[in-house]
Image 1 (cartoon, rainbow, N blue to C red):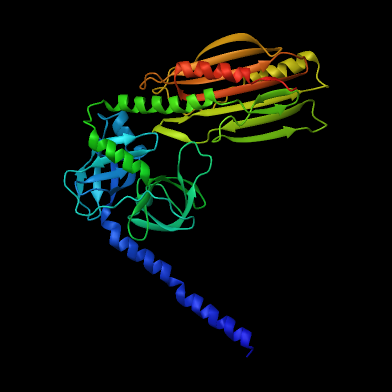
Image 2 (cartoon, rainbow, N blue to C red; image 1 turned 45 degrees about the vertical axis):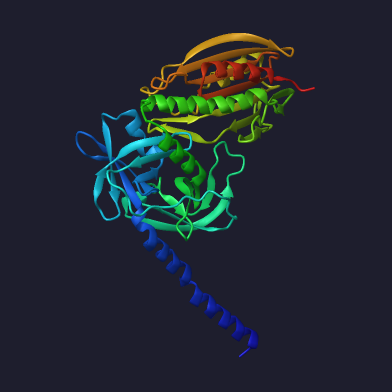
Length: 419
């Protein structure tokens, strides 16, 4: 037999013999640390029916447990309607007490009624990309499960710092730990985009929240605490937007706001079919990350879009109707229910800037349960030509009234002729 063929067969044999080793190690990791994982159940108070499930993990001898804010959010919004319990690995249950939360980072600290002899250590220093990580939780209420994956560093240019984890985090695993093989927690399961693209909250934010928990008396009403966190969050981001320069993108003869913050994701497209009656260029930017407030209310901080329309084939009236239809289109990206927000109140005006005349409509609605916070929509249409124009729409979520007005003014100043 050919020597190279023999060598190849021997190599394949070695690979086959080594293949089961990672699985065996994963099993050992799970066996060593499974008694530190819990399931969290949210129950309807009157019937005792389960309405939501998540995971959590012990982090102290005194019984503190970490999970996601979105797992326990109904306890903040409707404490009379919902209660929660902790199910430990051995099957016994205890009532859940909410100690603290950080809605911006999607974290919460809870506890049962008894101390815990088994708990995880938290690990915040940086890791090398490619480090093996094990995510543990209870997917789809199917029992305690471990998933082996890879640490792929922090997400680049993300509004909120997250770890990119290559592994399958599924529903129900939210709030569970992502650990190294020695049991140190490097992050908390929080979300997935499918196809083994998942995300973790870095452990350093858990450490900070636990320090705050130990130093707080816990007397602030929960909704007031939530509103304060969101107001401070928007303040930080709006200060950055209001003080930095306005990057621009050009569509036709216009300069318009472009990638005005590093965490924005922007796309563009065009429709230039010669058989069409008009040309359409578009540009869209979004902050991408949503803050989970409740099952019916998510906040997307910033979206904006531009539509440049021009035509040499349509008459003035037909182009005006086309332009007006685009301007009236109001398919927003907000996610909120009637119990969360008021109706929009709008104010229309005409603005002169940089030799441009623009029609503007600014609409705002307030958050019913979270005072001082608003959603805002600014719509702009240039009025300089009968057969061309730019329509621009801005959506701000969870901002103060003052910041919405200040940003709208700065945004309008970012629209001008291309020099």
